[in-house]
Image (cartoon, rainbow, N blue to C red; front, side):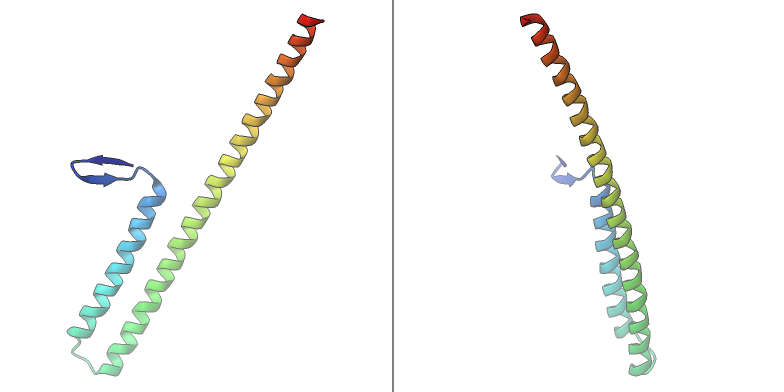
Length: 106
């Protein structure tokens, strides 16, 4: 996170996904409200259309959320593997150092 000219900038891909999700939800709410206010059709027809749009938006949000979870799971596995590799390297180096110490004190 950096702050420049009073603006907070996130350099994290997941944060941009969160902003996208928030934008989708805000757009859906604004669209539904405008649809109700300017609907030239009967109320029951307008309500059905709004319900359909709501279902469409809910499906889009589910898809984005699932993509987000997949990204998080993938990153977790990558970090887990890197930590495991690092731990193994440290362990090997430590064992080599112990052998060197035993040889030197012998």
